[in-house]
Length: 325
Image (cartoon, rainbow, N blue to C red):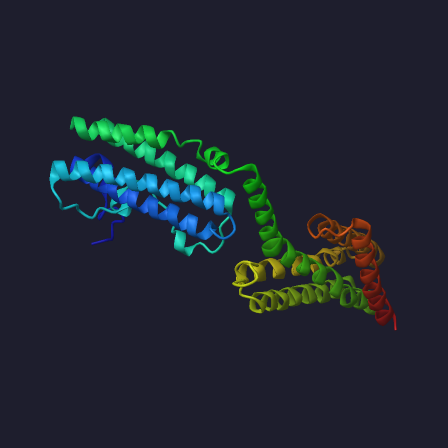
């Protein structure tokens, strides 16, 4: 007999009041634990927002208590284990424990979505229940969850202005450490280190296709090397630089992009046109590196541009001199 994906699931419309309450209890318990997990992950860097998530977890626990009391009064002490995945089309939650990095804005948006989904669940369950007390409690819980619809705004309001400023600065530092810095390292390495082999091949052969192949080999090879070097250099535990493999991917990708940029012009069959376009691309790459350094590394633009242009020009000149020898 072929496997039926929905054979082990039950439609929400087929649930009894007893099963709906059991599902609601399970839902509130899991949501509360998710909020506590959020709080634990944010505690060190965002203590004010972490405190709010703890309060939200306590609210979910209070909802669970009210549901438990009604369940015991109506159906006794045995609560059937009904999980989210047992009900077709029911609310799904992404596993928190498998999440390596926690973006505070994304977590606020996720919390808002969780509350909206819970409100919709209680409202649907209330309309189909024939038990007045069950109907009233589910309707009350729907109203409570509904009041959290603007939860992201409420989370912001619960944090003082000084705490918000501190959290924004912490988020900025994390973004710089985990994304910008490894990306910049890769872009600098890819743009500058591949200049010599690309232009050496160009002026040694005057063959655009051969130069393109050399440039692609240098770019991809440098990307793989830099990616592994970054991923294996630091696990991020002490430095706060994030997951090592994320940094490795960012560094490797940007290294490859940095080299491919001035390699692609050599797909143009005319040597001097391809070389002029490649030089123009190099100028854009060096300007982009200087801008990123000025924007995120607090380096004055002119100083950053001077450092990058001088270094890039020396490597570029080295490639031409060796290729022309």
